Amino acid sequence: MHEVTRRRPEENMLARTLLSSGALLAALVVTWQIIRPLQAEYATILPSMAPLMIYLPFGIKALCAYFDGFWSMVFLMPGALLANQVFFHNPWELPSTWLAILASYASAPFVFLLMDWATLADRRRHSLHPRAWRVVLFGGAVSSLLGASLVHVIKSGRIPEGQALRSLATYALGDLLGLIATMFILMWIFRLQRLTGRRRK
Image 1 (cartoon, one colour):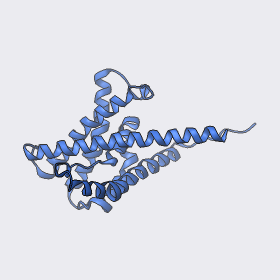
Image 2 (cartoon, rainbow, N blue to C red; image 1 turned 135 degrees about the horizontal axis):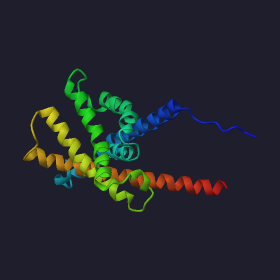
Image 3 (spheres, rainbow, N blue to C red; image 1 turned 135 degrees about the vertical axis):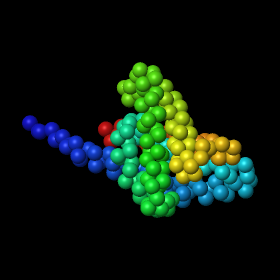
Image 4 (cartoon, helix red, strand yellow; image 1 turned 120 degrees about the horizontal axis):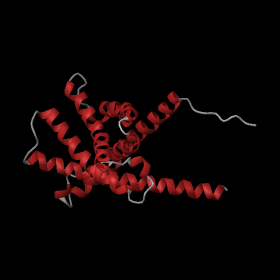
């Protein structure tokens, strides 16, 4: 009789951290190296769409927050710190850098927790429900606006209004499109896994 080997909690935590942070960094690379140049090309045709960028990393943040709650901050933090070092170059010596990262990655878990409290339901128990995607999109949209507003206040010291508010709305739309794109990509990955699994059987 074979013994069932179980992963220790710390091994599971490490695996989740590597998976989540790795997915975040992969989404950043695709966004910066593929999506951003393509959108820059199309911006010459549609100048009004120039500020809009389909931001895949937000999709990873939102989905991790949906399934893991505030633990997603732990799983994503190594990727977030490396992303700042490689892509964003915000100075580490400024407290605003750390506060902005914290606000950016805490917004989605907070919004999903608030939604659970408001609906008296645990979203993770209904994650396989056909309408669960609506909860993900709504929570993602709200958390994008909340996170962007908090980061703006932290970095500028002002409540967003006028042009700043319009810019935040544009970024939030890019986040939402990134979330939708990420969900479609993951859906096709899981579907391909199922098809390949059936063929092996």
